[in-house]
Image 1 (tube, rainbow, N blue to C red):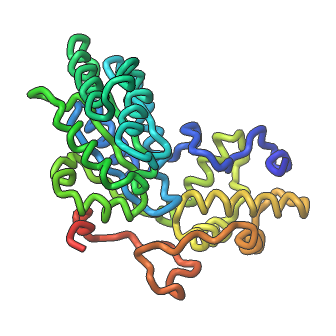
Image 2 (cartoon, one colour; image 1 turned 30 degrees about the vertical axis):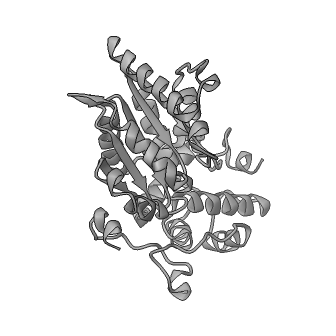
Image 3 (cartoon, rainbow, N blue to C red; image 1 turned 45 degrees about the vertical axis):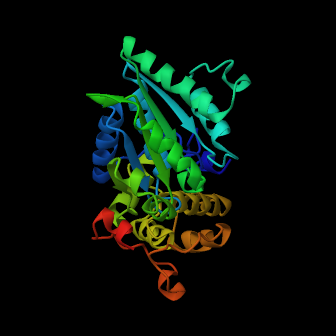
Length: 304
């Protein structure tokens, strides 16, 4: 394997949301803390929005660990929310949370299934359980099911919601939610993830190398190589790690333990192009440039 040429026992740039490799910037640390507090305390609906590859799933996986570390919390995860109807959706929610709705499907359908789930949530008050549901790729959630979520956020007692929900998705999710004011009114926390700054990108590469077992005094990536990888990746962590992996493969193929700018430039040809960012509509501006950090209010999505 390519990483063995660098003396590493593990692949530092494996393309999964492994929380072991989670690198926490100052912004991510704040977002993680706020998101965990929102869900654990049962404040209701939290939303995480950002472009493809910015780290939404990785952040939510880290927060899910934080939630599960609290004895009174139970968490569920839905990775694919493309359900055919309300019955399938409610059944999936219950299954992910470990709530047994046996027998409910044999009755009259979605209404009775939702009623059974409601009663199970209220019964959880006896032992103080807080249920937390994570829905990834939430921009794919059919619009009628947003109303189902809205109704579930009405299950509450004076001090908290019985079901806290975290929606994470691409920028289309903001537009999706903007059409449902009854749901947007219930958003307790809004997080809009930004691409990495150049210094953060270099630190992320070093962090992942160290987690994978790198013990050298100097990174295999020169400062210029790391900067070039950040520029080509436009600051997006997933694309950055893919380019870094390709660059290390190329360096190992030529028998070197150092990654050069030329290796990074060649690696870009081994990585599929990302879809253009919604923030960069001019294809010429989008090519090989980092995304610019937005200074607008997160709620500006709803003014569009």
